[in-house]
Length: 143
Image 1 (cartoon, rainbow, N blue to C red):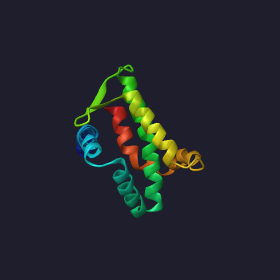
Image 2 (image 1 turned 135 degrees about the vertical axis):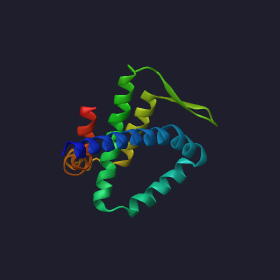
Image 3 (image 1 turned 90 degrees about the vertical axis):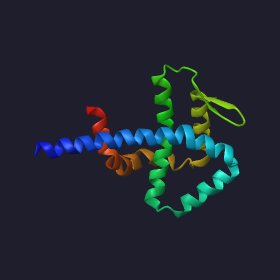
Image 4 (image 1 turned 120 degrees about the horizontal axis):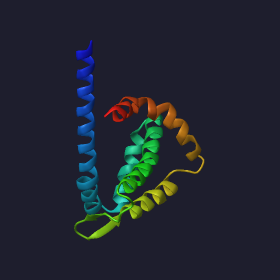
């Protein structure tokens, strides 16, 4: 009935709102804290342990997420008309503009993702990522 679909729509709206909140907390609170508290070497070691524990499908999905993050940084920069807004990490007072952040992500992507894997990313996006995120994408278009 209509009431059921209204409730589903309201639940999806709340899920999207919470997702944005979690993303912003991760991006502006957690990531800078981790960057200050742990060396890049310690972060890589931890990431390797996490990746070793994932299934093959989850590893594929992780690579797609990494690829999508490059688009997210680019899209965010464009929404701000390419302005030089910056995120500052306290402690060592490093400042990264969005273009610098994108370049850093691009460099990490090139270093971490083998060249022979990259052509498979669009296939994995279509077969694994898109079916899992279809409901949220549909919701974004109607909101």
